[in-house]
Image 1: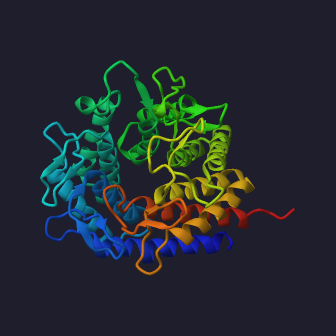
Image 2 (image 1 turned 180 degrees about the vertical axis):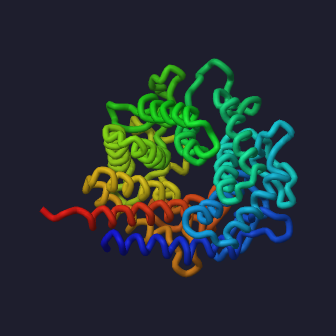
Image 3 (image 1 turned 120 degrees about the horizontal axis):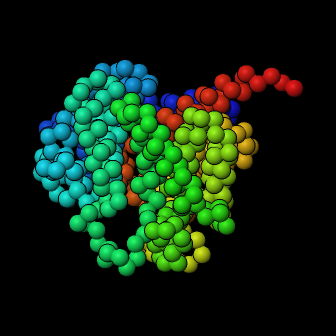
Length: 396
């Protein structure tokens, strides 16, 4: 297929398959918000509500309304989740819980700052759609709360003994590189620039290991390597997702060296983490080749592969590196062969190493309406840009 044919496939899958699946099956007409624990056919098998999945779905439908088409049903669906979150999502200090009962009673304390990150994303995107001051105020308050908690994100819920082996985690600076663009319309330009500069440096210098060409998931407080389970951990999906965030940031200022570095890291990560026996990208790896601590290390997960597709296409758009396009077609074929479910819609989330469906559910505690629709949208838009760019190139 050429770029335009791929673009049509991604657009049609988003708008005629994935979004209808979530609109049909996930809305909770009785209590508000969304039911995300859905089996293969979309039937609810558990009614607990996980805050970051609620937030991600608000973001998704707000984004579609803002960037694709101002469909009232999309905005109404986003508002359904936002109203539930406004009523039940936070504790008295404004921290976002991890999970709630179907009715909205707190289940799990706000130990995880990523609930806050996705809440800021959700209400930031929603505020663009509604121009409602209440939505922008929630986004801004949550953003500042993230900044206050970023040095110790889990606070009193941190299990680690203080001072023995303090580590920096890649996850928060990575997500801040994306969150800041979602919040840009609500923040002062100097604040946006500060976060972009700090996030880019942290991701590309502190956690990047030049000798191996890999991104580490955890490093010592001074940025040095920790020869431990946590320090040797590679999360290829995180690295590949972060690289398209970095490419987007670098493209704002036409920083070609930074774009090139992000593309090279993407390709290095893929070369290292691709399963040469069965295909697909390993979930976790150990940078020294030791057995990873997580027993699910060799599973193939939906979000890892979707984020990879985005990174490869953005890399190809910005650099024209043919390796990006070759890898894109390889990963695309794997995804459409193994993750897509043409019979009942959406994607499977979890495959075993051989690429067989491990869990047929379409949503759960970790998988919701986010990575697949966001990825399909990003790939569609980037493929359109690639096609447009190639049509304007004058033959030599």
